[in-house]
Amino acid sequence: MSPSPAPIVSGVANGQLPGILPGILMAAAGVGALAVSAWLTRRLSRGEIPALRILDHPNARSLHHRPVPRSGGVGLLAGLLAGILAGVLAALLIALVTGLPLGQLVVRAVGPLFAPLAWILPAVLLVAAVSLRDDLGDVPQHWRLAAHLGAAALLLLGGLHWGRLDLPGLAVPFPAWLAWTLTAFYVVWMINLYNFMDGMDGLAGSMAAIGFGALAWLGWRAGAFGYAGAALVVALAAVGFLTRNLPPARIFLGDVGSSVLGLLAAALTLWGAQLGLFPLWAGWLIFSPFIVDASWTLLRRLWRREPFWRAHRSHHYQRLVLAGWSHGRTLGRAVLLMLAAAASAVAAVGMTPAEQWTLLFAWAGVYGLVHVRVGLAERAADQRQAAP
Image (cartoon, rainbow, N blue to C red; front, side, top):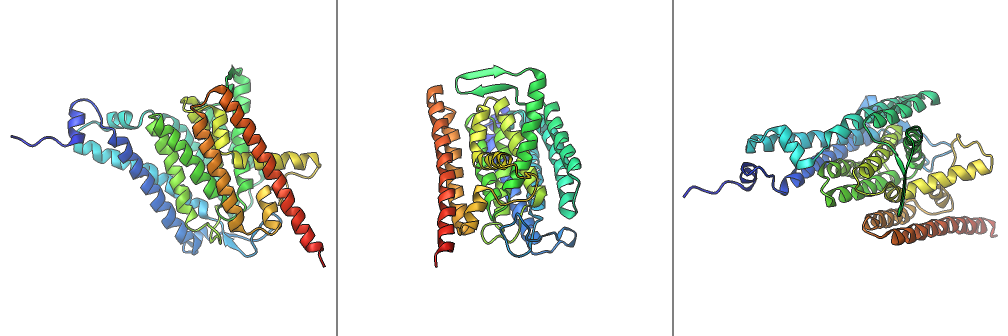
């Protein structure tokens, strides 16, 4: 009796792909992203690449007191590209073993992945190029804004847009002009708010690892393996960066890293909502620790008629550190908040509209308590300084 064919080959012969194949491709992509990001981030943190030896000197916005390399975003970006390449090479290897055409394998295993990526990747490269140039030497604000708007335009051309008012139990389509305007605003704000929130050891990397990890889980659970793989690559590239960014940080993301992560947060939340994996507000809930802090701080500065475009240390996490909390303590509390927000968003997908509204009101209360707690920490710090 001849030996039975291998499971993968047998599945292909029957015109089907076994469930293990998406996992293999995702694992290959994730390991590639993690390995390259960690390796290159380590080299960059040691200043081993002279052309990318960029130092972040303390300024009015900083919480650090000595120069630290800020080229870590290059390592993260390399991890993203390596993850994509590793996934493609894994698909090619499986195609060679099984005899299935590569295109058919990719479509069956990971779904419609490459169509959105054909627009997301150029947007990422555009923002990364301008941001890296800004890290190397100041780029005028109008050129940076033009790049951010160009990235939003690429996402719109790829069909990723904020097309309706989507709240629990309510979905109202927007007219085309409003959808385009809101999408451009959303993309530009996410790019910039992520940059604003990248000011403390481990914070931006942790938000990326947890936030994109949650998106990957939502995609995997719904069978959208291409989407899940893309989100997983970003999450694990962020983990690779964190190997040198946790307190005390030996390298920072720089504009190239924070801007790319903000763009990807916008792109993948829009993409996931378009696929029907979750409502857009659930994507916002995942990244709400950053969205709420940055948006609240901006509104607060506008209300006080402060020059909001200037460097400052008014974000909640900055105020806690200035009040005497260590980077480690502040990061620990922030990670708990991120995990809770991500878990709530994942759970919300299966809730009734009434339960979803209850969840959103509960989170509004949580963020109100966070604001109060920051104020109490500042008051305690002032009392300690005033004490004889």
